[in-house]
Image (cartoon, rainbow, N blue to C red):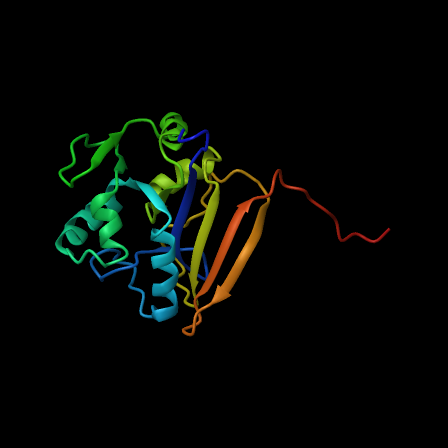
Length: 202
């Protein structure tokens, strides 16, 4: 904990309209399809998100994708590469414990270790993509803020952000916007326990 302030854990991910998670980069990152609707508006949003990071928590697959690409981007003014290459990266993995990218450490038990990670930083520990990791975080109610970039496409199948292990809850929409390409950017925070109502007539 820095100066008595606890970092927040934020999740940023790309989604299709039917809830399938999408990779943000090239065709080899996610065989379910790319993101042809990226534009300057979305780039500005992503740069702003990365500017708030103190550290990253990544699933192993996303880590492998990032580590194969971003270390090759050496421009210190690149808003994404400069953060990913210089800040601590914590990798949740059941199959590996050693990671070569500078500043990378293994996380053995996400549910237990997130609280300690948040004490070590002042601003944000950011999760990007990382579908499997996201499921664990959602199931354990560990995400402080969701940043969802929803693309106006339907896939019908694939990895979904909110899977069968999702715990019922209410989320509060704190801001939203739409890019010129039609991508809806929505930011949600915890809203407490799920409250149900009824449309039944008295």
